[in-house]
Image 1 (spheres, rainbow, N blue to C red):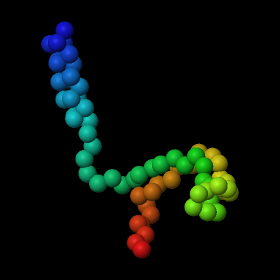
Image 2 (cartoon, rainbow, N blue to C red; image 1 turned 135 degrees about the vertical axis):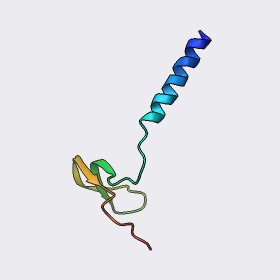
Image 3 (cartoon, one colour; image 1 turned 180 degrees about the vertical axis):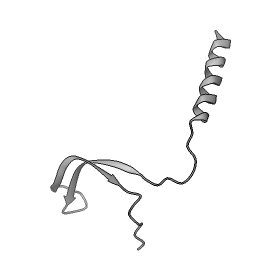
Length: 66
């Protein structure tokens, strides 16, 4: 039983590494479900801006430095 487990584990590790992608990512896509704006830091009352599934590519925007 131990040999079978080790063979399966080794096979999984080899196959998992074989499908790894390399290089710089050109697209980071997230799915937004709901967008809310809070009026205070506790977010006791929130105004819903939108509520639907929407894909957004966050790699296309630049980071804002403050």
